[in-house]
Length: 116
Image (tube, rainbow, N blue to C red; front, side, top):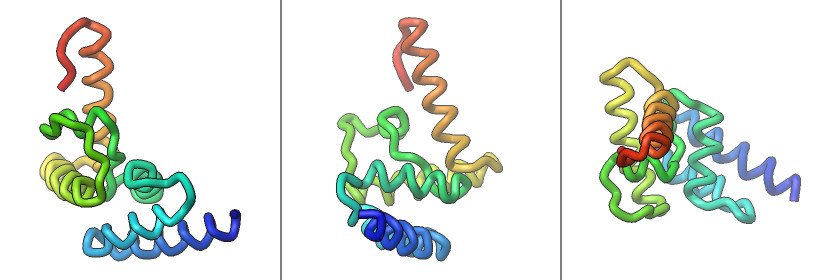
């Protein structure tokens, strides 16, 4: 099990170092681990490089207009591209954008308002 975790994370992170062009392959490599799907792989990538990769949270999916919480690889690639563009335009990291959306969602739910 540890050997698989090391091999998958090494491969996934190496692909991620090469940027967005290898995002699909990086997520697929990380998803080879038992119990790891697209959302968990996005979290691993986010912790590896918070500037470049957003975490695919429920809140960010809702904020970017997903009526349903769809955790597919194609949806994550689209999400990462969109969040990356917004982060770049604001001179923030993808992690900053995701955390701001999460915070807004929590504050809205605590005040009885609608989430983003």
